[in-house]
Length: 181
Image (tube, rainbow, N blue to C red):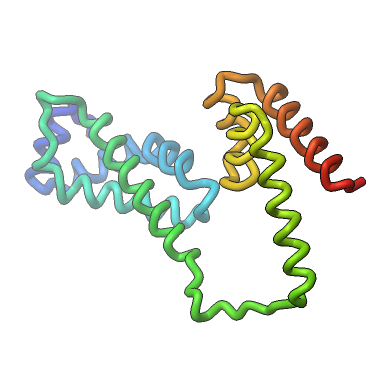
């Protein structure tokens, strides 16, 4: 059975299981694609499928929040998908947190080694602070905050090779200053 958008929404509002099944058959691929694009790096296929199922359940339960005058049904489903997928992603990040009480730190360095390492760190930071403002910010954001090179290139309106060259020059300056080979 084919449903128009308004008939589909009315069917779901009236808890018509045929309308619900039609919604699933019509929108599964679209919703799965969006959820996959948001979650594929952090979750397994089964988790993504569970997210899609949760989107359809949420659509079933929150259908009265949908206003046909404000937008179309497909867009509303995609918005539900986006927020559900982001919730799944946040939950996944929380699961990777390790309790500091469970973590046992092993100190393999004696006091003298720690002193020299600390001294090198201070020299490296002093060297980085001598860079021009853009190079300094790129270097800190890349190596201290782990930001992606492509994101740095976008943030500074530079090409990726330009950012790579700035990072390479910075590493060379640090190596020369520390007399490393």
